[in-house]
Image (cartoon, rainbow, N blue to C red; front, top):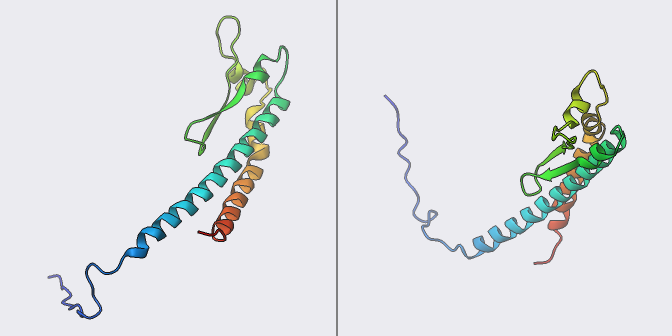
Length: 142
Protein backbone atom coordinates (compact mmCIF):
# COMPACT_ATOMS: atom_id res chain seq x y z
CA UNK A 1 0.00 0.00 0.00
CA UNK A 2 1.44 3.33 -1.06
CA UNK A 3 1.78 6.10 1.46
CA UNK A 4 0.64 9.54 0.53
CA UNK A 5 1.91 12.79 1.90
CA UNK A 6 -0.64 14.94 3.63
CA UNK A 7 1.19 18.24 3.68
CA UNK A 8 -0.85 21.34 4.14
CA UNK A 9 0.11 24.56 2.44
CA UNK A 10 0.61 27.50 4.68
CA UNK A 11 -1.80 30.01 3.21
CA UNK A 12 0.45 32.92 4.11
CA UNK A 13 3.32 31.68 1.90
CA UNK A 14 1.41 29.99 -0.90
CA UNK A 15 -0.13 32.50 -3.28
CA UNK A 16 -2.16 31.96 -6.36
CA UNK A 17 -1.97 34.56 -9.09
CA UNK A 18 0.87 36.48 -7.50
CA UNK A 19 2.63 39.39 -9.16
CA UNK A 20 4.24 38.09 -12.39
CA UNK A 21 4.91 41.43 -14.05
CA UNK A 22 8.67 40.80 -14.36
CA UNK A 23 8.34 37.29 -15.75
CA UNK A 24 7.52 38.32 -19.32
CA UNK A 25 10.46 40.72 -19.42
CA UNK A 26 12.79 38.03 -18.04
CA UNK A 27 11.57 35.49 -20.58
CA UNK A 28 12.12 37.97 -23.42
CA UNK A 29 15.62 38.76 -22.15
CA UNK A 30 16.47 35.04 -22.02
CA UNK A 31 15.16 34.58 -25.56
CA UNK A 32 17.25 37.51 -26.78
CA UNK A 33 20.38 36.17 -25.11
CA UNK A 34 19.66 32.70 -26.49
CA UNK A 35 19.25 34.14 -29.98
CA UNK A 36 22.60 35.96 -29.67
CA UNK A 37 24.37 32.77 -28.59
CA UNK A 38 22.71 30.74 -31.35
CA UNK A 39 23.64 33.33 -33.97
CA UNK A 40 27.26 33.34 -32.80
CA UNK A 41 27.43 29.52 -32.86
CA UNK A 42 25.94 29.34 -36.35
CA UNK A 43 28.31 32.02 -37.65
CA UNK A 44 31.31 30.17 -36.21
CA UNK A 45 30.08 26.90 -37.70
CA UNK A 46 29.74 28.56 -41.12
CA UNK A 47 33.31 29.87 -40.83
CA UNK A 48 34.47 26.38 -39.91
CA UNK A 49 32.62 24.81 -42.83
CA UNK A 50 34.25 27.35 -45.17
CA UNK A 51 37.64 26.34 -43.75
CA UNK A 52 36.90 22.66 -44.47
CA UNK A 53 35.71 23.43 -48.01
CA UNK A 54 38.85 25.43 -48.75
CA UNK A 55 41.03 22.61 -47.43
CA UNK A 56 39.07 19.97 -49.39
CA UNK A 57 39.51 21.97 -52.60
CA UNK A 58 43.26 22.17 -51.99
CA UNK A 59 43.42 18.37 -51.49
CA UNK A 60 41.21 17.49 -54.45
CA UNK A 61 42.95 15.95 -57.47
CA UNK A 62 42.54 18.25 -60.46
CA UNK A 63 42.33 17.22 -64.08
CA UNK A 64 39.69 19.65 -65.39
CA UNK A 65 38.79 21.43 -62.13
CA UNK A 66 35.18 20.30 -62.37
CA UNK A 67 35.37 18.10 -59.27
CA UNK A 68 37.16 20.77 -57.23
CA UNK A 69 34.59 23.37 -58.27
CA UNK A 70 31.72 21.07 -57.26
CA UNK A 71 32.83 20.85 -53.62
CA UNK A 72 30.30 22.74 -51.54
CA UNK A 73 28.39 22.92 -48.31
CA UNK A 74 24.62 23.05 -48.24
CA UNK A 75 22.80 24.44 -45.22
CA UNK A 76 20.34 21.75 -44.13
CA UNK A 77 19.11 23.21 -40.82
CA UNK A 78 19.10 27.04 -40.95
CA UNK A 79 22.83 27.22 -40.26
CA UNK A 80 22.89 24.59 -37.52
CA UNK A 81 24.05 21.78 -39.84
CA UNK A 82 25.68 21.49 -43.24
CA UNK A 83 25.97 18.75 -45.83
CA UNK A 84 29.34 18.67 -47.56
CA UNK A 85 29.50 17.19 -51.04
CA UNK A 86 31.41 16.98 -54.28
CA UNK A 87 28.74 16.41 -56.90
CA UNK A 88 30.61 16.72 -60.18
CA UNK A 89 29.24 14.62 -63.02
CA UNK A 90 30.92 13.41 -66.16
CA UNK A 91 29.47 13.93 -69.66
CA UNK A 92 27.26 10.84 -69.16
CA UNK A 93 25.73 12.29 -65.99
CA UNK A 94 27.55 9.98 -63.57
CA UNK A 95 28.52 11.63 -60.30
CA UNK A 96 32.15 10.70 -59.75
CA UNK A 97 33.14 12.57 -56.60
CA UNK A 98 32.38 9.57 -54.40
CA UNK A 99 34.50 7.32 -56.65
CA UNK A 100 37.50 9.60 -56.22
CA UNK A 101 36.85 9.91 -52.47
CA UNK A 102 36.22 6.23 -51.66
CA UNK A 103 37.65 4.02 -54.41
CA UNK A 104 40.72 2.05 -53.34
CA UNK A 105 41.85 2.02 -56.98
CA UNK A 106 41.92 5.81 -57.24
CA UNK A 107 42.95 6.36 -53.60
CA UNK A 108 42.68 10.17 -53.65
CA UNK A 109 40.36 11.08 -50.78
CA UNK A 110 39.98 14.81 -50.25
CA UNK A 111 36.74 15.59 -48.40
CA UNK A 112 37.02 13.34 -45.35
CA UNK A 113 40.71 14.15 -44.80
CA UNK A 114 39.80 17.85 -44.85
CA UNK A 115 37.08 17.24 -42.27
CA UNK A 116 39.42 15.20 -40.09
CA UNK A 117 42.17 17.81 -40.30
CA UNK A 118 39.91 20.70 -39.33
CA UNK A 119 37.19 19.30 -37.06
CA UNK A 120 38.93 20.24 -33.81
CA UNK A 121 39.46 23.81 -35.00
CA UNK A 122 35.80 24.04 -36.03
CA UNK A 123 34.70 22.75 -32.62
CA UNK A 124 36.96 25.26 -30.91
CA UNK A 125 35.60 28.13 -33.05
CA UNK A 126 32.02 27.21 -32.13
CA UNK A 127 32.90 26.77 -28.45
CA UNK A 128 34.64 30.15 -28.29
CA UNK A 129 31.76 31.84 -30.11
CA UNK A 130 29.25 30.42 -27.64
CA UNK A 131 31.37 31.42 -24.66
CA UNK A 132 31.96 34.90 -26.06
CA UNK A 133 28.30 35.48 -26.85
CA UNK A 134 27.30 34.16 -23.43
CA UNK A 135 29.64 36.59 -21.71
CA UNK A 136 28.74 39.53 -23.95
CA UNK A 137 24.98 39.01 -23.84
CA UNK A 138 25.02 39.64 -20.09
CA UNK A 139 26.80 42.98 -20.60
CA UNK A 140 24.30 44.56 -22.96
CA UNK A 141 22.03 47.30 -21.74
CA UNK A 142 18.33 46.59 -21.94
